[in-house]
Image 1: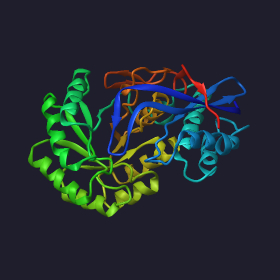
Image 2 (image 1 turned 90 degrees about the vertical axis):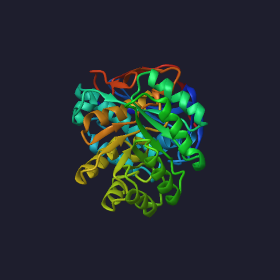
Image 3 (image 1 turned 120 degrees about the vertical axis):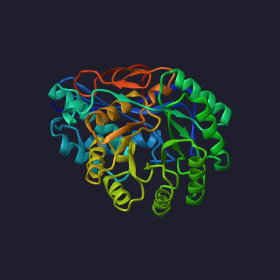
Length: 364
């Protein structure tokens, strides 16, 4: 089976409620979908969101990178030559981690289809199901409490609470969320780089004193401030998860070797795809550190790919793949299935995606 062509499309899915963090506000998912076409009629699917404030990638830059630089390297390639194909993707240009991720998803989808097996089984097959958290967007304490109560009603047992846009209100926000949650609900705080190291230590110690029982805190300080991240990790009891500080396996090694964080958050859009995510897993295993599998604000193509990696690797112990659960509708046919917080994957080759509704061609 050989690759003979590529198409790029725009996928749009409105959100149930606006997604708000310390970095941005989004009202609908608008992502680039990549289709790799083969001489045997099989199609490989990939997806990349524009997350300029984190990865630097935009809709035009994603489509331009895929069509102008990455996909041409793959025309005529055998889909079973997965390692060399991924190396061609990564060597096609510097940076541009999101378009690389989308193309790698499509490559691995075709790889599984050629071998007739679900991707997670080919990668390791460590689990049979996943349970994701649900994001509570940063807002007023009252609105966040109401959103938390609704999430509990929907069956979610773990919430990721966005903070950091106004540190002076973050303790009140978390107190309101905790009060609205049933006993046993796990809370993860995500400051999205919104605190200084001094603020982070003060706020987290206060949260500990208030008995707010955080499971972890994600990226409390600026991504580049590794010393500040280490200071927070050393100064508080709650485990610290590095997110924006870790794009690559080299970043993971630096963070974990320097004890700047306890865990790392893997996102395909940061690692440039599945091959990079597997390398981060290997680094984390070598340091006996656990990983979270996360996502940007993505629809169910990219989330399905991330779920396959998470299902395959035991080192991934926490799941933050709630993108489709935040949408009013899911245009993806097949792929990851959501029953409240529970994610299962179909017993179909590759990613298990049958098609995508409502796509419009996207070229630049």
